[in-house]
Length: 379
Ligand code: SF4
Ligand code: SF4
Image 1 (cartoon, protein in one colour):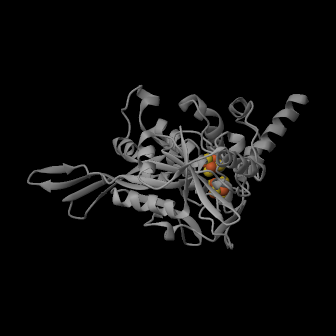
Image 2: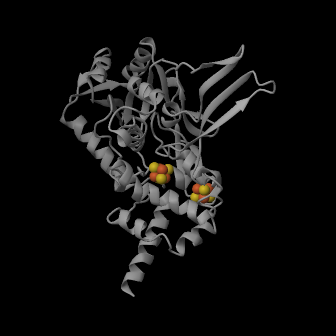
Image 3: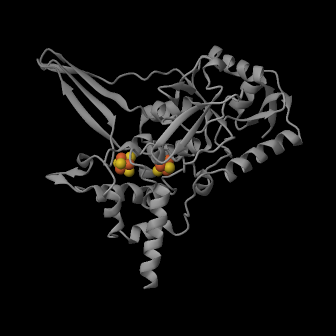
């Protein structure tokens, strides 16, 4: 597909166009001392002049002097909380004579445009599509109607990462730092001397129509080379990597390693890692009634495999100990997810490392497990 170049003002016009077209625009903004994806109303809401520092158990925003609008990486949330809300009503029932009237809440049908989606989060979105559209289980669109509707209405504008945090490892998971397809438009921010432009690659007809509504010029070979150059520099700056060769089998074949208990010695079982993960999809159901019994509601809430109750089956939890829950989480991500959905459950965003309060690093644990399994094989 084609690529065009727009100025910073042109990009501002593109955001205005989205709002004028009736989109709810969701993008990065600074809130609660982090880059948070939330509703934005224009260029002024983007985190200009901010960058982030991330390490295991550590996240800090830092001021910089750059006019860049995307000089940071992923914050604690992304698009997931809008496509798969953490708390959703399933039905409401009101007493009506001797029976009940049951209503399914109507969906907010306003179209959403996600701006500045990172390549890892785009990959995560495609993974959640497989989970929620039902085809992985039944071969047809039998899944979550709300998710499918929100996703079909979503316009996706990604951004090539121009910087990598200390906890990113998307390059080794082959999901970034440059998005290749699956978007409507992809931005690459170019800052060079006094130049501040965006090279915009077109990924869909909808994206092409949107881009055609603002002033742009056709990208030349130098502009296109700049995209590859920025992605290569970001890859080189990436703080971590995971060796995925043979990992599915290593994890599936080694549920009894002592190392699972070593990790559990530090793990708090808090579930932060699952709450920030863009691919985690576990949920639970909660029913409530008012005191006089005239009104009842059913809600779907995010759940976590670190919650002991999540594995409760008639009479008790299957995974009672922390080491069993951590093992379940990591093995699902890198091994059994392949059996279920044909892809890895990890996209290398690094959030679980940054937001783990005790700094447990999934890349280090995988390296340690590999080394132990290799050592055992050599004995
Ligand atoms: S497991 Fe960790 S690094 Fe992988 S996608 Fe989830 S939060 Fe990101
Ligand atoms: S690995 Fe870290 S974030 Fe995840 S449950 Fe354990 S302590 Fe919490």
